[in-house]
Structure formats: structure tokens, C-alpha cells
Image (cartoon, rainbow, N blue to C red; front, side, top):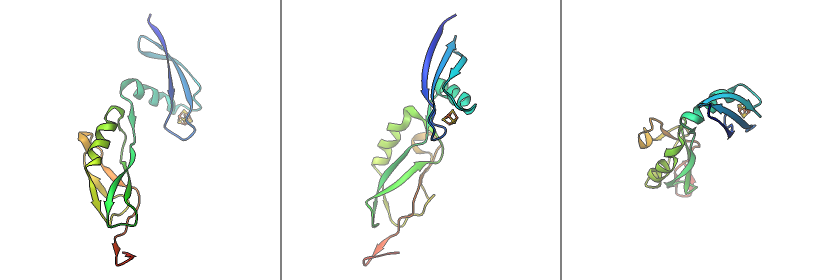
Length: 129
Ligand code: SF4
């Protein structure tokens, strides 16, 4: 039997358990360091295809701030994070934007949407409307 050990940091909740996993022929035979059973699903997903929520910012014009905070509305493959960030680098929004507005649909073909995570009012004659 081919045994190996792997280490993961669980990102499901803010506790961030450091998990040591023993594998035999690609199957999990034991885990240490996890504080709950949710780690099982996390570890299996990490072994198959690591997924992450992306949080970042994009440029916005006509608002008080120059950058709009956004995130994916679901986890996307970790290997596509930089591709998505590159796609977002070409985007500039125009205020106003409301929280949860979809900024990009099916970003980089992931099936996830990029959504705003805060309101950005439009500046008009020194006032924000
Ligand atoms: S193993 Fe459980 S408690 Fe630990 S980070 Fe993951 S979800 Fe949170």
C-alpha cells in the first residue's frame, strides 16, 4: 500500500484548523487537528479540486472611493483565481452600485458571478446620491 501524509488548513470557518491527513492509495485513513467533522468534506474537496471564494476589488468611477469591494458568489477552483483577477483588472464600474449587484456573470467560465459587497453611491456636485 502506498501511504502518504498531507497537511491542510481548513478554510470552512474562521478557526482555521491545521489538519494532518494520512492517506493510503489516495483514500483518507485518519485525520488529526480538526475540531469538527466538516473537515472531512473539505479535505476530500482539497484532494479533488481545491475551491475558494475570491474577495478582491475593482475600479469604480464617480464614487467616493476608487475601488469597489467584490467577491465571487460561490467558491471557484483555486487554480483559476489569477485568471479571474486578470479578467477583473480590465473592468471599471460606474457608480452607483448596490451591494449584491452582479458585476460579472459566469466569470472566466467558472459559473460563479462577481458581486458587489458594499453600496457605492454616485458623487454629484459634492454630494453622494
Ligand atoms: S475543521 Fe471544523 S472547526 Fe476546524 S476550521 Fe474546519 S469547519 Fe472550522
